[in-house]
Length: 518
Ligand SMILES: [Ca+2]
Image (cartoon, rainbow, N blue to C red):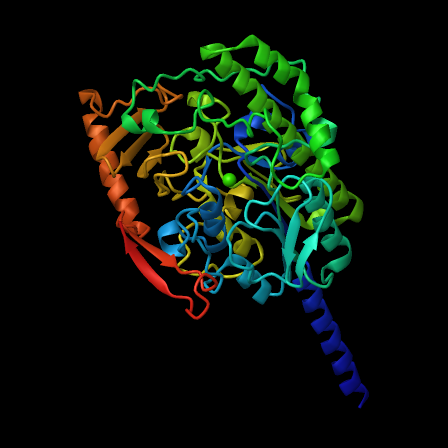
């Protein structure tokens, strides 16, 4: 009897130790902002602003200098991150009015939840369907406003008063402190709306940068002469396409209280009067637009940085930091006046590349830098790999966990594939796909049958396509072959896109999958 008791006690202890071992799996904190270009992060050498808190992640972890997205636009990037699949397979290729993410499909959060993680998403979601695979969700509806956001939860709409970036952090911290199941490791997607257009800063930062001149990019006055039609044919220039709302020349939309509206507009009043009196035109007016837009953008970024500081401080104070892997990224890059533009979408570097900083205490060498080509396509696989969950064979990316651990696989990818769809509106960026290698980039604008090739070593700002230069003929041939190989690998015929219909748009219809051929 006594030996049986001893056996029971030993078995119970073994069970407990197994359970404890399961609880030791790392927590995953995925921080993503919206439209945050790497050129507005001091860890990436920004000459415009300082981001001391985002930089903490780089200082304690790894900075990726070649992180790319598969489709440089908000909703589609998020769908890729959820599924580990390109847009033509995950059913969310663009942000069109009826765009709708089918959460019934396989996603990383659902697999993590099934594997014993407690999961949450707080902040920007932008996939139009309600989140599936999350124990807790508290999300903006669509883009969401900068002030007083109504947020959606499983229990209904919750109204908040205040500044959205601060509120998203408050809600995320409340979940970490008070609401999550502390017997499980957590997976938290903490996702800011900022610094998405139209860049309404918080009251406390309205005067920041006021008497400074922000550095202009090298290509603010690009004349697009070295490229095919699309670069000239877009509608996203700092010179001509920022609206009076964007430039804070008129009252601001977005549900501000009268007091918030008044505080905001007072901050711009004197400069606006000077502009009115000056009748600035041409290049001088473009420079003025640039300063106004970029200062507001940076004020929004700096507020994100402050809030990330609050989050990192909490991880430190609570002791969670040592077993929490922290990601910082954006849903894509962004033009801060480069090529004369704002916005994203293109396969050109500023929007194709996205910031990616990852800190993993005890695993990733502090202050390290990777030049390996990684993608937002790899995030789902990486989350699963970190959690010890088998990565499904139909996910299309690859876990970057070995890179974080300092063991780069010898067969790591040497090229990346890109495909952008949304056209003609907004911004009139022609659809395109292409391939980038270490040194070259081949882009095909298929609606007008136009090719561009850039030699990134000789022409890092991508100002002159050398597609027709005979010197590059063999490179063009090789890259076309590589493009074909990648499209086969990723099952993209360039035309067929899975689209899911929103069942809420037609109440009786079931979720249906159809393929759309362009
Ligand atoms: Ca975005």
